[in-house]
Image (cartoon, rainbow, N blue to C red):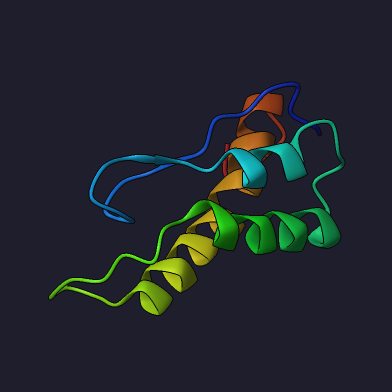
Amino acid sequence: GTFSSLALVYFSAGDRPIEARSAAAAIVGRSLDDRCIEAAVKALASDLPEFSDLQADAQVRKHLAGVLLKRIVPCTSCTLAGSCPAI
């Protein structure tokens, strides 16, 4: 499936909620294959600030945001299409 629109918002990736517009743009209108998801993860790195605190440094936050994107976007797509094996 494909998304006709998408908003990706990350909490705890900065001092406020961060909308990952470049990552979303890398996904919208494209088939959700591995290349699409990897392009979105790369774009996500530029969307997120260099934010570190006592909980995690910026590198860890960006890594975890990418892991979340890789897991949730394909799952959301198949859920909306009603074709997930888990449904």
